[in-house]
Every structure is written in structure tokens, then in C-alpha cells.
Length: 229
Length: 229
Image (cartoon, rainbow over all chains, first blue to last red; front, side, top):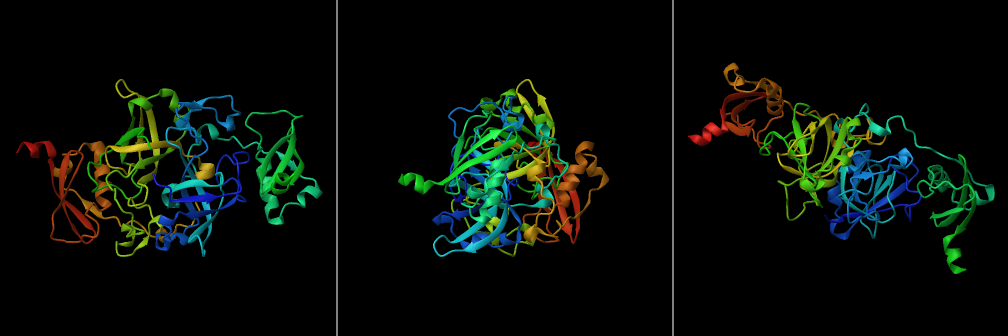
């Protein structure tokens, strides 16, 4: 398997990464081709499609041995399902599959043609193996039976960001941050109301607490400024 | 990339293989896991899904060098498109992506749990890399823009099979054969009305001719019988 490209996203570490693509339209990214595959003609016709499949590597979730069962976060983390009945990253072959919205294709001076996408659910720098057009006449099956995910809604949190903290975030990124926080970026299955959690996003170290269904942001400090201290 | 399974289909060679999955509901197959991955618990919960993604290897369409453009059969074979705007098998990484209907999961004596599927568009024996559940809430986008495939309908042929030939085909396979023939199994872009074409399917060597939009079957001889001659 050759790495043909990598995807740049806002997720510098695994905390905050949405658990499926498409759920986070505000999660934008760029797909940059490796030099060997930076051929404009390989993209001819792609701009006419609204969505693409991206096949990518679960590069941060590799395991030596595969486990036949996993515990999906959607089920609260206490029920085991067969790995092939889930989209878990811990599988025999570390390939992820995401449908992304293709916002535009832009020719750049230093990186060739770059794909601008939204709906990203990969960590920044994730290797990409393949890009295919989304074909609604064969890929879209609205009435497919969704198994254990049927009727289960993602448990979203309410998010409170004090005004003085919100001001530190560029306006066009504020909704993205709210979306990420509402997805509950705590390490899976932790629920300690007194604990202060932290993770890095948008160049900021975000600190927050979660009480019942409300997430409150406590601080947002520039990572660069923190490094200087 | 590890081969975790292989898929058994009716397509012994590339002629007759439908150009996308799902278009041929009568095209059934079996996914048989390799011994190392023959673990029943890896499938727990999968039976509750109606459709699965299969990631597989274009094992018969390997190329040493990749070409940035291909000529999609859907466009008559005379227009070049970027490889990433198509589902062509000739791509940097030889991975195919198909959504199949999961008909049933059956525990067998000698092969472990076998997945019975329909909508197959792979050659018999194709290696399988991964199986994932189809999640309609993120995978189904009915109104996605279909690019150059928009509004293009597969050019189907009318099929005429004389009664005495049809009788040689098991009744439950007759519609499948008609579906395959209507998809035009001639080598791409050939259109010689006087030529007799032949290919093997269902253990029969089928001979046919195509005149305008009508395919007429001329003979169907058992492959085993032919070998004896």
C-alpha cells in the first residue's frame, strides 16, 4: 500500500476527533498529494462530484494482534461487538473509510492541486491510500438496516464558553470548537465531575469540566505562549 | 495488508462482471474467512445490518505503473477522466470498494461462519481486506452530485435465449444469466455484429452474438463436457 496523499485537519491528537465522518460539517481539512501523485490530470472530472470516499490509514491505532471483539463508544463502552460489525480502528487491516464533502479543488504553487474537504474525522497528517468518487446510485442506501447503531443518537453535551474565552477563537472557527466539545472529547468512559480535562485544538490548550450534560470551558491558552513559559 | 477472507462468485473470468455492485441483485456470493480470521465472535452484531462494505483487492487488474487517467466504459471508452474521479481498477493502490447486501450468516462445518451476500461485482476468489457495517446515517447521501455518471444509464441489451438453451440452466440462475448478458459482456468497445463471442459462466460456455441492442444466445455447452471432448 502506497501513501498517495495525507490529510491536514484540526485534530492534533485523538481527543476531539468525531467518531464518524459527516457528523461534523464544520470539520474542514485539506488533502495534499505526495509528490509522486501530484498529477493534475488524475483529478479531471472529480470537481463534478459533491462527495468523495477517502481510504486512509489508522496510523495512530495500530495493534500487533487483532482482537475479534471491540467495545463501541456508542454503546457506552461496556458491550462487546464483533470487530467486523463496527468501524473501530482496531481491526486486522488498519484501513479507515470516510465519506467527505468535496468543497473545492485548488491549484497551489507549492503543493500541486489540493482537495479542500469537510466532514473530517481523521487526525492531522493521516496517510491517504485512495480517493474515489461517491456514486449515489450505488453507494446510497437510505433504508439500510443500521444494526446496533439503529435509533442510537450520539450523546451530545451542551457547551458553555465564557465570552472572554470565546473571543480568543477566530470567529469562523467558533462553531467548529463548539461542535467538537459537544461531541465529548473526554477519554472514553471517564466521568469525573470534579476533574479538569485538557486537550489541544486550534493552537489552543482548552481546559474544561463536565457536569451531567453540560461542558464548561475554563480556559483557552495559546500553545505557543505556553511553550515559551 | 492481510487477506482476511476471499469471496466466491459466479464470475470465473472478468467478462460479465458488473461494473458496479448493487446493480445486480441476482449476483450472489459467499465470503469465506481465512483460517486465522475464522472467529465467530468477530461477527457478533453483524447480522443486524442489512448491508456491508467490502474492501477487496483488484487482484486481476494489477499494473506496475499507475496512469493518471483512465477511460470509463460508462463514457463509451473514448473519453479520459482522472483516475481519482473513477472507480477504475487501475489505480495506485489496487483496492476495490463495494456495498453488498448481507443475505445471511451461516455457520458451516468446514469453513466457519460464512457470509452469504448479493450484489457481487468481483471475480471468483477475490481477496478481501476488510468488512465494515454500512451505516446509513453517515454513508447514505441520496442527493450527492454524481459527476460524469449523472443521468447516464447503463446501456442494457435485450436478451434472447432460445427455450432449448434456457432449459440447460437451473431455474434459480436464469434471471442472473439474463442480467449478466444484458450488461453486455463483450470485451469493452467491441461492436462487431457478425462476430460470435464466448465466455464462461455457471459452468457453461455461452456463445452469443449482438445486433444493435439485441443479444442472442447461440449455444450453452457444459464446460466439463467440452473438456472431455
